[in-house]
Length: 126
Figure (cartoon, rainbow, N blue to C red):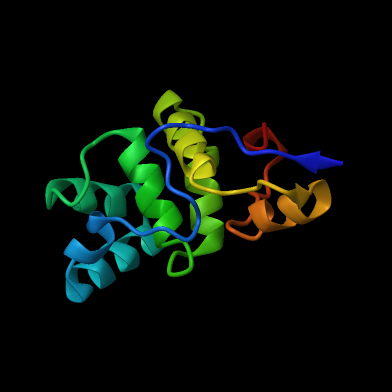
């Protein structure tokens, strides 16, 4: 079984980078990542306050995807699984940045699940 990614305009393939990736100074990026790894909502607040992304789910999801190797996977999983509508939209944007085209289902699922840790609470996994 092969799965195909949806063709969505404005969505970046996994290997792409954006100008938002390069315009954040390393010191500021480190501050944002550190804040996110302590309290995800605060990290997002700083990111938006400093105007590196707009306060919209697509840009936040793209940032989380681009910098997910630096982010605490458990905190990322908790943040993406919070019950708010905004977090659900951020999760959707985060997933849209991934490219599962031509991958077998099990490999695509592994790649997806390697980007964050599922929350421990069954209620959060929907």
